[in-house]
Image (cartoon, helix red, strand yellow):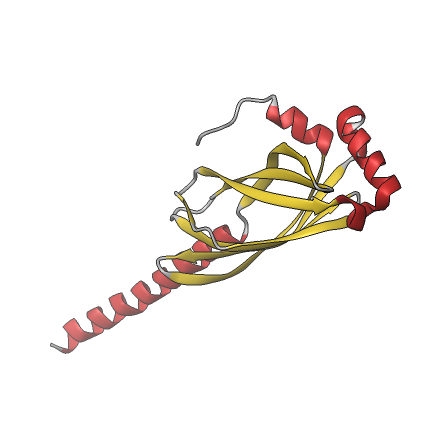
Amino acid sequence: MKTFLKIAGIFAVFGVIGIGVYAGKVYHDIKNISYELVKYQFKGIKEGKAFIDFILRIKNISIVRIKIVGYEFDIFINDIRVGAIKGTKEQVIKSEQYSLLSIPLGINLAETFGLVRSADILSSLATNPKAIVISLKGMFAAEVFKLKVKNIPIDYSISLQEIISIMNEPTPTT
């Protein structure tokens, strides 16, 4: 009986160590999900406000599915803060798969850039996309197995020209 308890104890210890190592790897993978801004859609201007949807492609590099339960970003265009976005839309990303997240933004042009800079930014959108740099700073909130994972930080910049190039490439699905 004592031998059986010793063997059971050894298996229990190794089982706990194995679960700990597995949980550590999953946590590391989730903290290192990959993301990139792959598309934007200019929705138009109404009453001095420009409306743009940004599409963020997220890849879950983990071996388990994760659920994005919220996000909070500050969005910058050419280092000028143009808005803050907070969302609670839940989105499940399967293991080693991509998912798209739409981030809608309304920019009050006169408040954000002033009347002169607004015209410059709008003309650059059409004529010189290399001159426009979009930055996202913030975080994702995620869950795995109904457990909240510490917030995943986002700090990402890309030029409008790079987004246009990505938009012309085929989109990976896995």
